[in-house]
Image 1 (cartoon, rainbow, N blue to C red):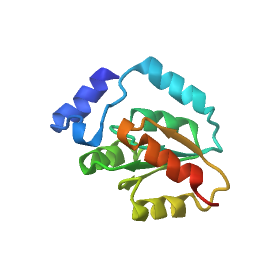
Image 2: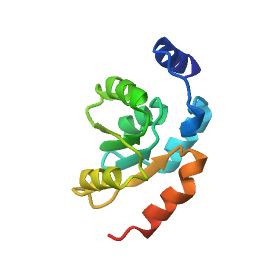
Image 3: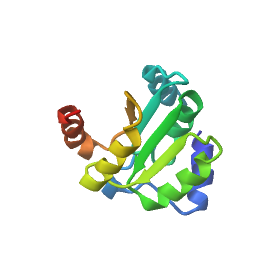
Image 4: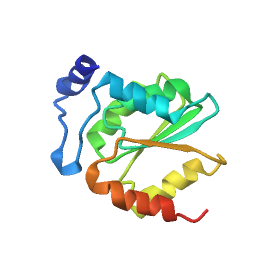
Length: 139
């Protein structure tokens, strides 16, 4: 996986941005455990926050009905859209998940589905505000 990361991102001159708290997942065993813990089936819809370069997203797309991923970094959105188009079940939203307009768009995308699973490799600095928003969200 590390080689795939280097190939895709370094070729494009993209490196993790500390200002965005980026820390890309490149450990295959951690990835496997995370995806396994989600217990996905072909009927599941997944909301992924901070897909980064798409390591988790690719695995989620293979195992679920639909993946809606929210990425703040515009340079990564282009890569994600290109890498994930072959799956046909992914929606990449460019935006900050803590921003009201992004949250509104995510809610619209999730509206047709009665339930969804949340999977994320969140930057530490947004974990508490993100959980507050989603745990206090009124349905």
